[in-house]
Image 1 (cartoon, rainbow over the protein chains, first blue to last red):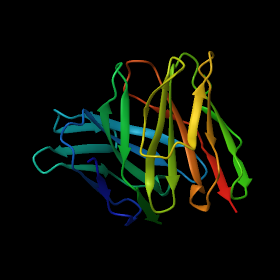
Image 2 (cartoon, rainbow over the protein chains, first blue to last red; image 1 turned 90 degrees about the vertical axis):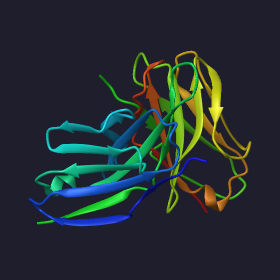
Image 3 (cartoon, rainbow over the protein chains, first blue to last red; image 1 turned 180 degrees about the vertical axis):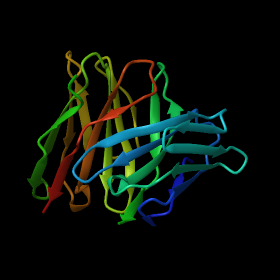
Length: 114
Length: 112
């Protein structure tokens, strides 16, 4: 079955780097995603990586994928107080008709200490 | 461009009642997904509608149902509410044949 695991909490000091880790069990996923959820808001797609890639960088965000260990990480450089949120890792599986069904982890709450 | 919208923002019901949640996708999106975010359980996939039809459903009992209208908006109905149905219900939409799902702000359902 599909299972996505994340640690529940992470605290970092402002200006440091944050690394949020995620492990998944199903190797048939096509895409892996990172979503951000701020209080009272819906999920915001931060970035995603195709399952045959090892790394993707987008400004302060770096996604690393280790397919062998089924491990995904999100690194946020120069973490700011505005980065405080819950971060969800998700796997995307083709659902037929060209669309994708997502399976989410429980989310990692990132707290940034000023 | 307006994002995914959901209504109501909050909904309070008692056990045994029925709840109806609504979602309007981004203009041009034909796929609508429903997710349940219960405390401590993370996000669970509920239902996927595309072109007016239910295409897939997650591991939820039949009292969770819905529909998609010709304008691609969607309703989620939860019958015979139970206390554990209290959760944030998120709707997402996507273009057909596109992998990116855009999420609405959610409806917080509280069952007393």
